[in-house]
Image (cartoon, rainbow, N blue to C red):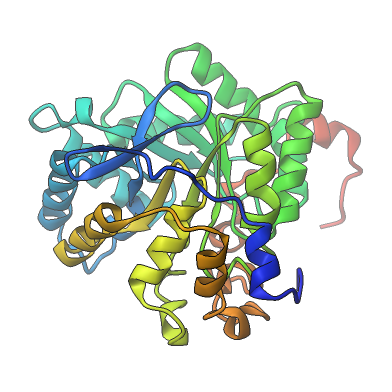
Length: 341
């Protein structure tokens, strides 16, 4: 447990926005860290768009409607739904000039240069784009992940080569397990004189009380001028099952943190409309209002019961598919003793 502080004390440690953002049409926009890019405050989550229960035509229509109404940030990952999520976004972007409306983000799991290179090329092919706007190292949830990514022959070599070749514009990383792993990733990056453009993490009303990314990582990202991408607003609807808060409570809390974009699953017209309604009604909250809001979740949040991505392996897809990460790099294999079979 990170802390048993009261909601008032927790609220005092959580950064807040002073301005909602820039409203254009139906959508608010904020700056993406030091990149010079403006992104929509709502990002459309790719995982939900590729679910088997969602028809491909419906997913493409939702993407088009979201882009037409002002969402420009599209989230994805190499591993979502066996590639189906990227393929659906690719089909949507290939129609009617929609690529020009979209800031395309995807993620890779590869920890070795070889595996990461192959995943980057897979993503480019599926998304039907000549470059990816933001590529992120996915699921940095173990303390060895930063070292594997940055070591000789690691995944970062592939990402930097892809950027040099014009295949990607910006670089970030994601994770959902423990804020200290994020802080270690930032520490390792600094040791390698590397500055991330973005960092993605859970930002929700439960996180305020337990292993809090909002309290620990957001301030450090702000200090380094790294854009914060929020996720797990509803915890895949598990947070709502607590009965402590309503959907708009969840959205209001996340939008009030200095994030550049809140990535949320949208696989229906209702959820799309809900996201736009939250943006249009959002007003920055002061410390007292934040304390009042998170007091609703204080008791339920304390042991991480409703943030399963922190306390269980349920959301750890790379743990179930270690082959996605790749084996040790050649440099490590030269140093390590041969393990018995």
